[in-house]
Image 1 (cartoon, helix red, strand yellow):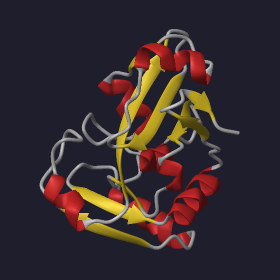
Image 2 (tube, rainbow, N blue to C red):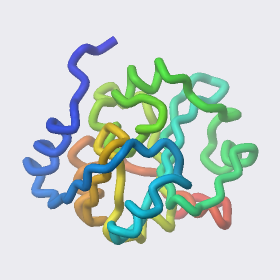
Image 3 (cartoon, rainbow, N blue to C red):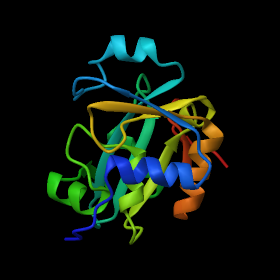
Length: 172
């Protein structure tokens, strides 16, 4: 296991270094999308749910979607071209994204230096501005603009696969 996982401070420094404006709100830990509605009310933009998945062939996937987006996991593999999907375990999550269950976030891609995780972005979230993610722990929420989020991904060399979950189709 890599010992040098990036922390929240590292993440925010990385955003600064890449000219990505950000605002972080500290709050009590939030473990599920349904929690923290008062926090979301205080922060404009798209709020996210993030799923860490592993397919039957061992490929890892991170899905970031708007909190209200319905994701049909039984059919998703046919859309993204993966083997059948199940949830990745906590050990693998920590090893690749540097986060624990409840803190899964697209910002965790900063720790996936070996690019083991394929990133799937909800088409609706890809239009939201700003977007809100946990900054590697679920006791805070960090907002960045959509353009800033794309700059973050580009700096990591990550190209998201954009999926319209309502239509269950990849958007080109």
